[in-house]
Image 1 (cartoon, one colour):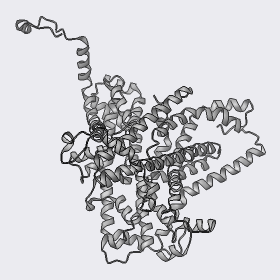
Image 2 (cartoon, rainbow over the protein chains, first blue to last red):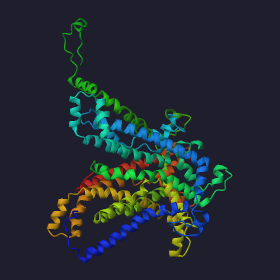
Image 3 (cartoon, rainbow over the protein chains, first blue to last red):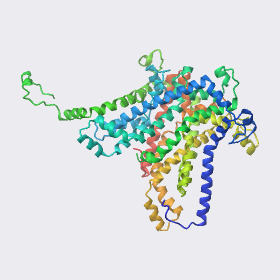
Image 4 (cartoon, chains in turn red, blue):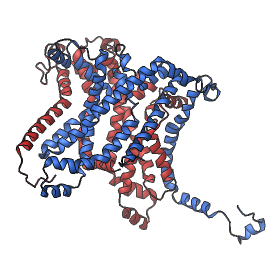
Length: 293
Length: 323
């Protein structure tokens, strides 16, 4: 809509605008109020949580809940595991996705449409949870972190978007480089990849978020409680209501309610930290490319 | 036919190799793109091992699979598992739970992002638009464990904020987490909270792709905002909505394993069990590999049929189709 064209708004349109703004304000609030409440609750004590109803600013500020969380071996261990799994997993994801997408972006590659159609087929039909589990089992990957990295190494949708991105890069660059005597390897590493940095960053973030959030993978494939990543521990603590003492046998008196809040906040922390960057790249229209594709 | 070449001639190289021209062409192309195929290899291997091999695993639903006997030695029992499944009273409970959840989602959660995107598109103050966008898609990046935890904490009957609110409005205590009657609404609302904002932003991106000249021409012709909406905006969205709807129909038997799994407990299991969680419980925790694969196969095949059917219907109506 062109902002420069002034329209004389009728009364109906003004009323519509007012309701529109109101609705959108409420909608935005509903989206973020739950965490603001939980964030506030994590910085206060159990007594306040129980006595007050909804609040965003705590009266008594204390770091007890976080102190407890950071002192718990089980929780901290699982956080480090999650970080480790996320970093390596994201690297593997990018490696596999980019190396497969680049050749598929060359339109005269033999076998290209066969491969692409096969990939699209996997988006509408799959073997299912049990056959995949049996394959992972037969590869002896159960209880290994590789079971968290390999079965999801490439997201079919991501592959297609990255491929489209490579396709849209101007041919002339590659042709000029070939004339100058570059090999394929050099073209890929010295010209294409540097130009693709924003896109790579975006997908790195998407893959990283999915690793951090991954619950089903560890649930299915990791049986050793020492190897459980953060999401599993989070579920134990809050959804299965294992109390903190059951989990850890620590001597520290655990603040129950605010501790739950603190653990949730820690679970959301990486996402919140990464969010401004996501915003920046996202807004640049990567998604417009996805929609066109 | 490759020509038989006399050994004497081979040394002289006075012959022409009569390979089929096509084969030569193929080999040349393969050689030329050697590097590209090397790059392709890991990804293709991934798809074969983790996507296509499990598709063969579906065959175990026709066998009485035992991990000790392995795949090849487990006895073939044909459609036994399917018969057992269809006659199991659980079957109807599963279908009912799964379909009801999906339909509620399609009715409430599918149109909402479109509506919000259209509303947001009418906002002319850019800053407001941007802030709203930033805020509404935050929940999309949270894990289901986090969302389940937030729900638990807020709907806790003792001191949960939402429970207190409901008590004030309705006057009696409602346990959202345990009451089977509230399970489906809760799930649908959670899903909307998580994904509506994200989907709204996707639609907004599509809306911003509409040619502004069309709007300008319409304004000159005297169309007010409502007419612009009906005659320009909506028709441009038709194809995207159609494609997304087809895809949504194809996943009607999918409910999001993690989501339902996190929210299922002993008290609401009757309404909460859907195909995805049933396959997990039977297959992984109880080890009934063959039977649970049968359930999973049923789900995948129905999904495939539904996508084809919706795709065909879309074609008949003259809309864009997926394939």
